[in-house]
Length: 221
Length: 300
Image (cartoon, rainbow over all chains, first blue to last red; front, top):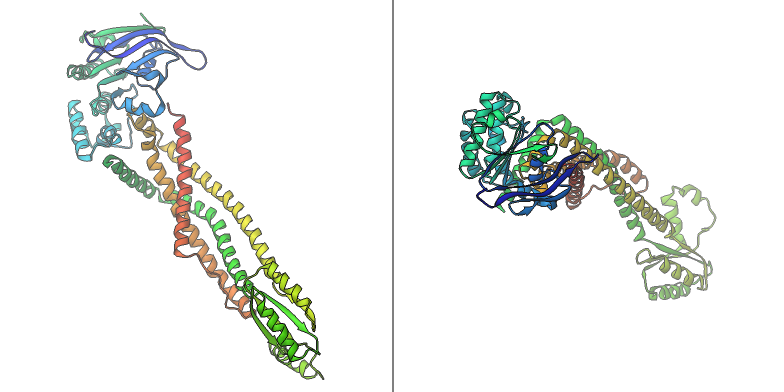
């Protein structure tokens, strides 16, 4: 790890209501500009780990620092400002199907109050980067699974976040499409974005030779 | 600041678009809110009119002094002078028994009966008009008049206006309670309308939260929606009340004519209408704010 950690976990555990312990005693750091893949079987705690970074869940014990901020003790009102510096890519895409491809990508820029002219320019640039500019007026429902995932990535990076988090981005994609999606993550990492991807698809990342963290039953192996 | 204004503008446009895209649902919601508001508004307008009517009569609160038949004109002058010196007495008027008999014959169509009388049975009277409808003042003047020689009977004519005043006060309390209850009902109606809207936009809210939208950002379009529904409902309520007054005024005119009055029910003035629309908008806004806040508590 060459750089100072931009994400750091210190003795982090997460216990859900009902007693299920998803993570236990997790310690690690991710340096700025690193490309990290978190692997493990289904239920190993990969998604929970990413949710803790994005303040979607709160750690039961321990400290989660993101960009120097203690996310595990963060007030509700502060969370949106943390997330504006994160790009989130979801397995189920979380796209808005009553809006066009362009409107989905421009949404994060509207949230931060960007002028429409600048927002349009940046949204088109993001769509171009993932190869979807020609489909900007289409409805996301008319896109294939791989295209929807690329659209989700475009929405995640349009704000130029310093950290990109992706939860099982290739879960429902064929091998070739999965490899192209992973390649997109690598290209963002190459321009300095810290990328953390949770996946169980080892085949898709074999070519990338990234840093690997393996979770097993809520513990780092 | 520009970004904040821009989002307000976008939110209001989006809200208008949503309302217009479901015209039937919007119209039904507006009618429900309008009817809920029309009840207390109508009662308020009637009460204000009743108060005006009562105030008109109250201004003429009087004490009548009936004189002994042996009272001479010097006695009458003396009584008049003492009454005029009394604070709170606005006017003192002597009504000779002959004039009283003529008035009675004219106003009650009793000319034939009165013509058959061998002598005038009515006494001379002094009518004292008081300044306002102060019960204590009326009582003081009555007590004083009872002490005058040659005064056989004293009658206070302001009792019924005080009863009317007490009734209006009771009505106002009842109206306040009704207003509070129906305001709560309006907040509940808006709360539920917005809750249904939230259900249809749940994905958008979730995604907005995940990409960094603040609670204020998420609240804003719904607040516009609630406020707009409240104002539109207020307009419907005003329309219903105005229509009701038009219908009622025909019967009121007939009744008032029988009492020799020109009284008509008056609608609210422009400023009152504006204040009412602001109030209904505020209630809609509040219902919406509560609805979205409750929902946001369930999101991360």
